[in-house]
Image 1 (cartoon, helix red, strand yellow):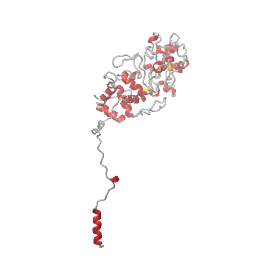
Image 2 (image 1 turned 90 degrees about the vertical axis):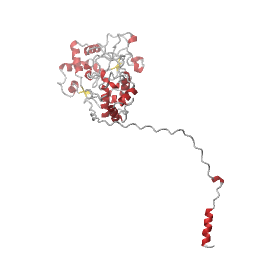
Image 3 (image 1 turned 180 degrees about the vertical axis):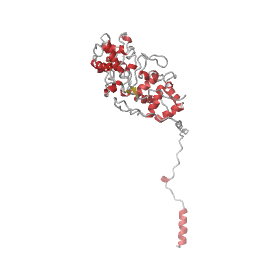
Image 4 (image 1 turned 135 degrees about the vertical axis):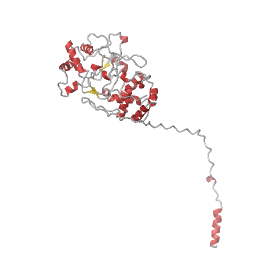
Length: 370
């Protein structure tokens, strides 16, 4: 066969369709399944507002007599959070109705406490316990007079909703509507204000609020003229009388809970359960957290119920050893101390020597405009 004939035969064979076995036949495409309407894409979060913010202050060092404390793993302290928390602490816009701020009951000039036996909440209901100082809270592991809260974030959240009466979502929305606060939250938390990060901002500020450089601290550092002769004598009486058993330097608290009989003059049904509110244990009835004595000369009235108006009255009561107090079992570690009027005055002079300087935040910040 010629070469031309072979080429023609090959072309004819290529043009013929191949038979496909039944097993290899193309199967029909399945019917399409109706998946419903295509979901609309989620809207993108709006970018943070472009607001010119001043740089936040640097976080101050702890006073020389106090050690550093481990930072929160859930809420690491940053200058941006601290500056934001400082503003919120003084801003009544964080409350339900704009009538009260944290600083209403924690006044810098009163050693960040209150001058009232007890304070009203937003709405007018009264607290049953005195507002304690919020200085040096970074060193505490339980909070409130009864220790019912375990972290600064938890106590800030509780006080925000309880004392300030805040509806968290409503306050967050109000702050986000303020262009400056919106920018401050984005800078501190990389997001707008939320019900979670507002208490974290409060806590960040309180974690750096520390007090030191008192006359007592200077004396302990070697300046023997820093404390007056009466204060020096009062320090010796303070130790000799057993006060130091619970008011342990450098913070002058043992962070523990004791029954000292304050309020036991009331009928039993009207007495404050104290620590029992947190633990539900009968043996904790009437126990309250040992208050710090740093700044105590500025933060009267005294005890959990604010029942002693002056520092002298508080010293005299504690020196009595509770000998005239009736009621539940009282703390056995403190015994009566025979203190004259002069002795009481000298112990007072020593406690006055514990008034220190706040490391940060005593000056009211400039609040964002409405």
